[in-house]
Image (cartoon, rainbow, N blue to C red; front, side, top):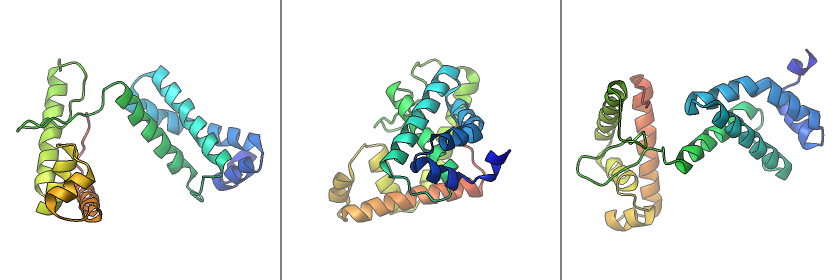
Length: 194
């Protein structure tokens, strides 16, 4: 019961100073939540276990390097690491959303095989429609940068040359486009899932 009284920040500090048991307490404390999050994304116990292990290998390496500086935010930091590793897993297995440059773009090519059951086809169609509407609501300059970056796979240098603005301005427009899309998603409780 004493483990519950020790804060994550204290346990991280103790681990960095050489107390290996502190990491064990952190893992036990957060294992269920982190594993459940990973499993909810990959739907495969073996893959989830691999990603979970990779997450804590990355956590350990970062802590040992002294590169951890998220005071008091251990769990959100670990969740971000696990989220990034889930994305890496999907990229390696070609299951990430793909973008094509055709006139009517397909935003989420969710499955590597072309056969979709009726439910997945409806969900995919709805997600594409929702994302198109979100993009249409953006200011023109943000929409232009987002389209060039995400659908034409252009670098920010290329976008800067094409639009006649600095690279920093193009980066800023992309950032604001994503922020504005997130605000609309949260405001209207839009669920973009595949």
